[in-house]
Length: 299
Image (cartoon, rainbow, N blue to C red; front, side, top):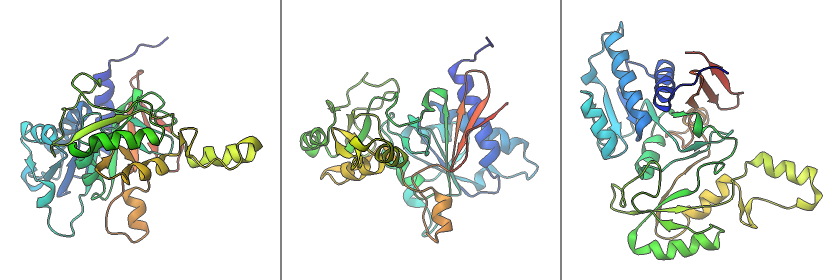
C-alpha cells in the first residue's frame, strides 16, 4: 500500500492545482470563499502573483470575500478586499474560489458548514465561473452520502415555523445549529445575524436516478424525487426549502454553472462550479468537470 498524506496537504495540493488552472493574474475581481481549504487557495494566488511574468500589482486585483473569515484571510495575506455590494454595476467577478462540504457527480454542492452559505451563493452567482476546492472526503456520488444535513439560513423569528415546515418535507430531526454541532463549526448566528438550521434528509437523487428507477423498476414508476417517502431530487428539494417563508438561503448549490449561463446569453453566474478539485490521500488531485469523467492528476 502506498503512503498517504494528511488532510491539510491534500487541501493544499487541490488549491495549488485549481489556482494554476483558473487564476488569471490579469483578472480584476476574484471571489474568495470560506473555510480552511481557502487559506491554501489564497496562498497559491499570492505565490502565483510573486512569480508571474506579468508583474501584476496585487493592489490592482479586488478580492471579494464571502464573510468575515474570508475577509480576514484576504487582508492577512496583504491583498485588497472589496465588499460584494461595492462591485461596479453590471460587473461580473472573473473567478470565484470556494470550498464545499460535499460534491456529487453532477457538481451539485452542499455548502454552509461554516455558516456562510448566503454570501457564498451571492458571490458564486455573480462570477463568470465558480471553482470548488476540497479534499477527498467531499468527493461523493450523491449529496448527503456522508455529510449529514442541508444547511438552511433562516430569519430567527421564523426559525420555529421553518423547522416544522422542514419536518413536513421529510427532514429527520432538523435543528438550529449550536456550538460544537459540526466538525467545521460555524457561528450560532451568520454574518447577517440569522440562524442556521441543519436539516437531515435521505441521500439526494440525481435526475438520472429517477429515469433509471422508472425504466428498470416498474414498481417505482412515477417516482419523481419530490418527497415520496422522504426521497428528494436535489433541485426539487432546494426549490421547496427556498419557498418556505423565513428562509434566506439554502446550502444546496444546483442548476447551471457560470459558463453555461454565458453560453445561453445570460448576464450573471451560476450556482454550480465549472470544476471541482479534490486533494486525494495518495497526493494526487482528482478533477471533476461538468459533463466529463473524473480526471486524476499527479502533482
